[in-house]
Length: 235
Image (cartoon, rainbow, N blue to C red):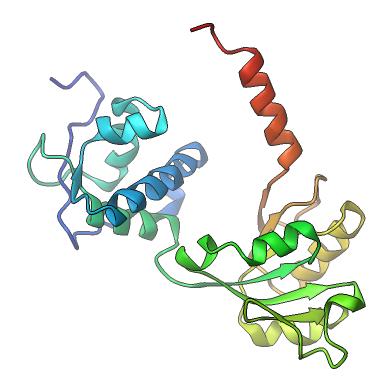
């Protein structure tokens, strides 16, 4: 039985991908949609065709009612009680999150973190194509600025950012640079028309209104984990 204000379990037919305007999705919900997409893609690769919110909730530690409320953004489809068509819902989520196409991206910074990010296969699988790497340390790019590649991605002197970036058709940038260099690079990227920045530098940056940004501070995430562990209820 459905409780009040809890949408029933819908069925989403394959290929029936509704349009959900990004502006209608609250940020907290958008974060959960990304988690749903990740897990649904795992189910899809494993051959699962339909799934109910209870099974998805068990994987993510969320209630089935929370999942149904979030996925109700896509409307009500077909028979109740059947569950979600995994392939169709993956398509709907990718469309809503803007990852159903290709996003050209550059990485700035080729230290330990940058090297790890270059080799992360998940970017390509989710439609994020790394077009170039920009680095300040001369030993990390070729003498003629064209003969160094990592995983097929060319590495350039960051001083050539203004020269080369406009020709790469890039919308996003990943910042993996020291704190002292981050703000100056944000300013340069904004001037070059970059729309989004994923910032790994552990510092709060001044971001122009024309640019969207997400900060990833690994130390802060570990602090959150430590707080959760310390405050976990005894089992």
